[in-house]
Image (cartoon, rainbow over all chains, first blue to last red; front, side, top):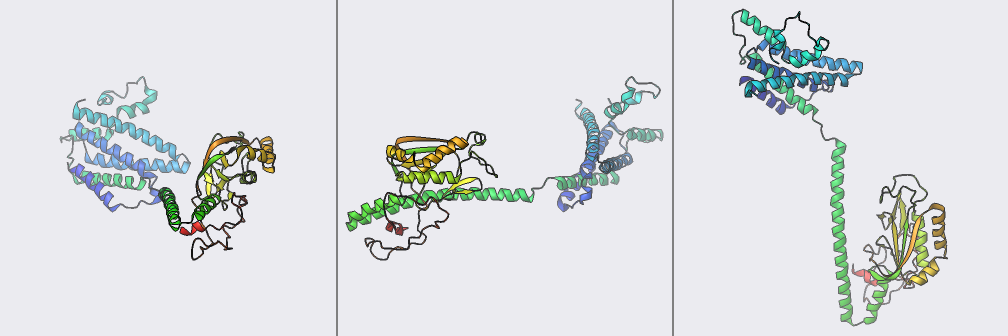
Length: 110
Length: 332
């Protein structure tokens, strides 16, 4: 419950203060969002599996976001930013779907 | 799918070892470090899972929510300035169009009212000759709709000028052979006047003595209203007589040449029952009504209507002869 409250509070704060993102940071936002989603779903699954660890969650979250942003940055420097972004999205998307499937199995036994 | 990867010892070589990247991605979506940390805690004699109610988790989730919100707001496509302006222009055009059609209907109704009132007052003053004179002048001034027998001349662009593909649209630039120009229409219309036409309308736009046929870009403009092809010229008059005069005249020969040289399509048809509308935009710009009785003889007022220079077609051999300052216009 407390993590959900944190998520909602973060959403509310972000919507209310509506900070302007500098232009150079904007290409990394979508990838960062996907990476964060992956970390969150992984954490939910770990909770349901009974092996959640807050430090692992923080580290995996940060490393996910940073690595994803770095890949996009590298791709931009090499001129293949779009392709690398697609790759990151595909990998993280597959992980998100597998984790969600596992969460579903835990919650609904289906 | 959950526990399988951990059952396997590293020494076992999988049959699909060449695709380990894909299989590990598909089979172990969960970060392996969760399992490792749980194992460590188990060895240390603690519960494998930590609580989710720690400050760390709360802060992390707060950051996640913030990230989602910022990402959504920063990346949502905003309506561009151009799109906004375009929408505004479209709505303005639509408003003005409906406004203009409403005004036109109102104008038609009011002019009918004016005409009725004119009739009434003239009847009351008991001057029948004036009534007939006004009727005759109105015909000449193209103020009233007319019907009768006449000719229908249909002119259209050559079939090769890719005109059929986009009917009604004209290209935005460049002159193309095989397209009807305003000059063609001017010559033809003048030829019809010369052949004794009593009233002429192009695509339902009545040609009054001040109407101009012009080119604007690629569109033919009659009385400031753009026409789309085909151009149907309705000329009231004696059909046989007009045809006999028109065809050997300069305009008829010119039209023949257009057909032969540029494949411009034209067809002439006679009809017993044609109608032409009245010109709703008839107005006087410079002429002033004479003060006093309507019946006083219209003398030489300044009847310099229209600019004249931009209206080459304004040579109507109108059925009524002589200068016709229209006293009935004063009621507007």
